[in-house]
Figure 1 (cartoon, rainbow, N blue to C red):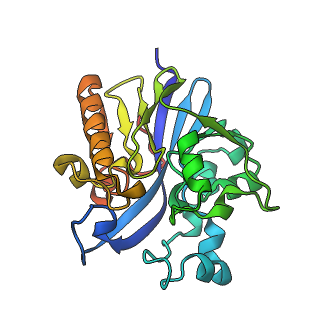
Figure 2: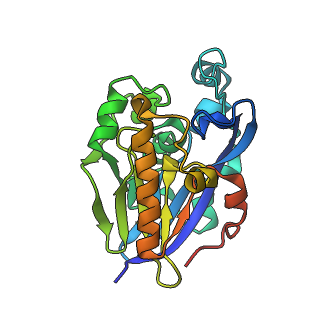
Length: 268
């Protein structure tokens, strides 16, 4: 029986960029607005965060913003991240603090998914952090320009302690880590079985947009140009959704996000 009880999508920022960043070799010149999401999963054994959004300081501090989001070297530019979108504020609206998070599951280590780790640590979150060994190895290589190395350290510069995992596994009964490499070396999606209704399959950045799913188009950012690997992961997610009856959620699709229950309503 599933241990998951409720699920909240958390809007942590929005980002405007060329659509081809989400759809490989498609949509050049079209600017889209994308939500940057994290997900809070309540279970009978504690609370799980799937991804943690951006580092607010790198966006709000002019010097840090110039260093990390200089348009000359970082074509995507900085996201729009408001104070009320920070994860500690979302948690406060639910009567929680970062210390109430028991496990952080990082789908991949890009700046808009792992950047909030430092802030959560600063705010008293001592949760274990799960990430794939392949993801860590690729991030450590310095070859993935969407990984900010200092997102992976604390304020004193000490490396954050990750629990490195290999392959698929059960996080808890009813919460399953699903391997979907392609966008990054060790990208992971998550299947969540809820007490009522269909399961939810969080694609993460294996599928930014509904278009990635419907047309089986790889995301625009690929690890070592492995387009077929990314397409295989999309097909895997679609097959898993059919087999389990799950709703397959794209990760950066504003139209899709706006159809979800408005926070603080939960999916239960």
